[in-house]
Image 1 (cartoon, rainbow, N blue to C red):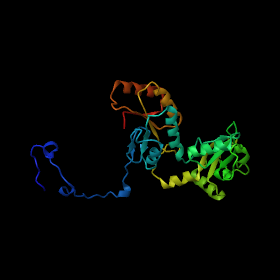
Image 2: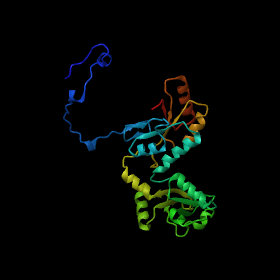
Image 3: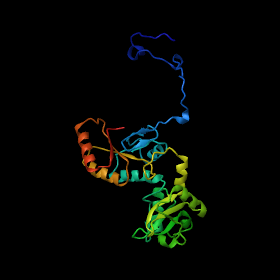
Image 4: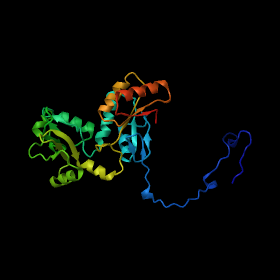
Length: 287
């Protein structure tokens, strides 16, 4: 080992003894645990379990929907930052929840009197290739896909004029993914609307989501098969309004994002949230 320079002004004087890789050898101990048997799952809250012990910080340079989706697919959880409007943050949560699901409970839809321009805008915003078309009672009347729009030039036409409405393939409520996959393959379609006996749209199953289930078997999901999502909130006047909006779109955990969690303001905010939102899971303090 090299001689340590402890002369005045040397690094050792301030930081102590330093070691390099060649100075240390770690001897592996005997183990009967196989790598495939290791479980690194951890409980985040009383009702949320992660498959890997990893969260991302609620910082505007770190976590928005893209990272939250990627992290949840691997078994962790992203905390969406709060430096945006309430509407924008709620939209970010909705984007995570809709990105992958065994059953999309609140799919993007359009009314029959919407235009092709409306459809193209929604498809671009949500990065989707098809939209169920419903009437004012949420009854499914058709489905619009990229294939229906491929050669359209008049973007002011009504979607009802170009959508697929004859011989619609649907599935009843309660259809599991295995059965849905069989239907998708049989009819060579990519989107399967789920409807009630009265024809009311209850959800949407897509072939892409089924593939994601197979590709990411350890993804962190809620009871509906949607990716987990967290969101940060500040100790501000609009905290109740923000939490209400986030809960409405299905956020799984709220993070009281404060540099110092052990303060009167944070504790009061925590009590207020737990009092007004009984089922919301809360982390007090930043990540």
